[in-house]
Amino acid sequence: MSNTVVLITGGSGLVGQAIRHVIETEPEGSRFGKKPGETWIFASSSEGDLRDPAQTRQLFEKYKPTHVIHLAALVGGLFKNMKYKASRLTFLRDNILINDNVLQTSYERKAQKLISCLSTCVFPDKVEYPLDEHKIHSGPPHESNFGYAHAKRMVDVQNHAYKEEFGCNFTSAIPTNVFGPHDNFDLEDSHVIPGLIHKCYLAKKNNTPFVVSGTGKPLRQFIFSWDLAKLFIWMLREYDDVEPVILSVGEDEEVSIKEVADAIVKAVNFRGDYTFDTSRADGQFRKPASNKKLLTLMNGFEFTPFEKALDITVDWFLKNYDTARTGKV
Ligand code: NAP
Ligand code: GDP
Image (tube, rainbow, N blue to C red; front, side, top):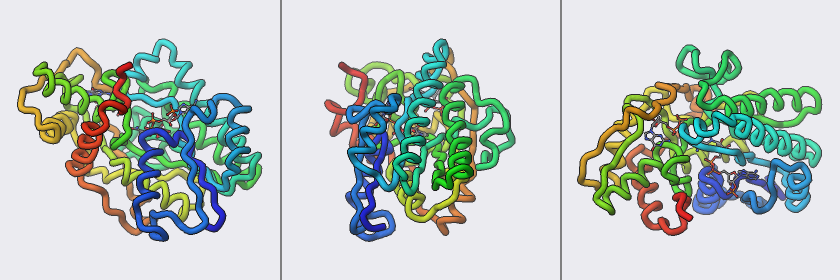
């Protein structure tokens, strides 16, 4: 790709910063490294609120992207999604607006390629497992993420419409639960891994109880953000189809929340005991997704072992505690 400008919306977030890390650290010219003639732009909301069409156009006018990886979204873990349930319109509408503006502007400014980010949270609640790319629209999502899921599903519908009507090269990626450096480590609004890392760190520091929400029994597939970044770069360069691709570890690599807590205790070197607050929600029990399509297309991919990825994340959190997103003001 020569004279390529890749715009990453949501470039300041967990996944955006992971793409920056990979592009800057992989050998130049390699499969996931920077290629000659490429410019990578990592945009945050301070460069433009993508809920607003005029600000979205301004951002595209400024950088004139040839390629777009669209990550910007109103994001949150189970408890943030549930908190917003009373006003589920916020998750629905913010994400609809952001996505519509980015897709329409990519079309108007003739971007050669756009990859938008969905999530395995968008899949139906009651569905036969494992999840695969054909099952997105086959039933209502889990009630805890009604707004987020419906807004994100619509991107797949829009991608097909833009392709059919205008021939646009638009597609989408579907990651599972992501973690890594630059995550949101807020105690309440984050996903489970960053939330528990922060809680465990405070328990160790202050000699206070470490409490894990729910029963610890639900199962999740986790993907390390640096691995996910490589998969996005692969998609950008090597995948040209409107149908989404699930970006995940194997369906046989589900981990229970208790196993996550145990691994965090080890990584943080916390010596106390911990308990489960079973009055809090478990959310979906499991949602295993198949990575068969991904591995077939890529001819295999080596994921970072979970413990190693967790150590990198905890190490980053400890070194960056003062500036990390921890919810403190
Ligand atoms: P994140 O760390 O919370 O980052 C969100 C990014 O979106 C930030 O760069 C933020 O900018 C930007 N943003 C939010 N609202 C915006 C607006 N109105 N206008 C412009 N930019 C806006 O999120 P993430 O975890 O990296 O998520 C990236 C993508 O992955 C999202 O599409 C998400 O749905 C998807 N995903 C995430 C997970 C997960 O476990 N984290 C799992 C599956 C899918 P500021 O920094 O300026 O606020
Ligand atoms: P989900 O995969 O969309 O449900 O997202 P989360 O990353 O928020 O994971 C939720 C699961 O982790 C649920 O089973 C929660 O009960 C459990 N969990 C345990 N402690 C925490 C915590 O501190 N924060 C979050 N978000 N979830 C937690």
